[in-house]
Image (cartoon, rainbow, N blue to C red; front, side):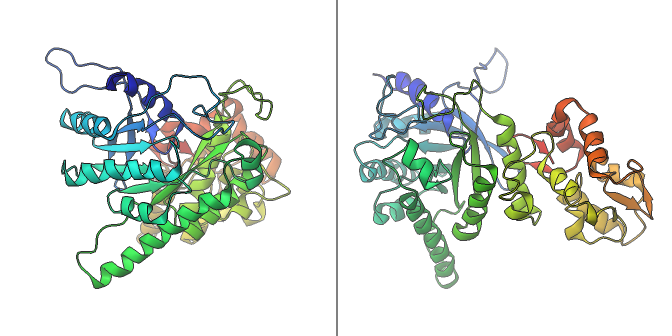
Length: 426
């Protein structure tokens, strides 16, 4: 099988990994035009400063030794198989880079032969890219649980980001759908990566030329909807990963039905709205000062699909509201639905010089269609006359059919709170 045929198979297989957003463009150049795009394995990711970069997103192999029920590459699945050689991946990466198709590489793989064998082949690829090809582009690599720490540490010196996919929120879920995997085995490399990053930071203070160790940090992915695990269990796990393992991001992937196995839920479409709610809540954990047990609990284990998590939280805590916009502190401002990090900072900054007026808020990027129910300005309330939770909820949901307007990208462009990945306003 030639490299192009392998590329079609292995780029398509990589689309189930959501650690960077996939795009698969087929747009070709025209006479007199600028640029070109390849449908095979090109995805987009974002840097810390907001720049969008293109990555070659492929699997090294889809020939797996495991039989995870939810995975399209499982050993029992009847599908075309392919495996890149290190030479082929290096050649494709360099040629795509020279043609300005990509700015980096996102490389994952099924487990071929053993975790160690897979990671050793990864090591050969990234080492040769850096040392022989002098490739300085971004490299994101999937670490394979079960590989030796020695090979993991060697790989970490050459890549920008490592990720270890947990996939399912609980060990019980793994036992049912991926019996060859154990959650503790997945957490071991996460611990090792976190320790390596900490060690690098300490050594960097003492030694100027300390080799970099995963400078862009580590991430993971959780599948949403493959098991009966609640949103609360998923969000609680994410919070623990951020606090205990120093993760940069937890990615959520709505379960795609790729099998008719009776152990899997029989659904026709992925639970994308539930995935979006988890991304919104994740954003609240990382940037708004919320904790998982504030947003959900054992008594309320799942998000309201008609309301974003912050609105839902606010309506359950109406004793806090309304808040006076010209007096409340920054931390409480962030808890007002429709007020994001940037707009909260603008409000605090503007109050130093003059009182903030209602008409000023829209200019600052506040989503007033939600915020107006939870604030006052010099004692004046601009929502409905009642502060009744049910009436406010009905009014917010009634402003758009089934609440879909709350997912509009235009809210992000105009202001309000934002959620990464899909332009979610919360």
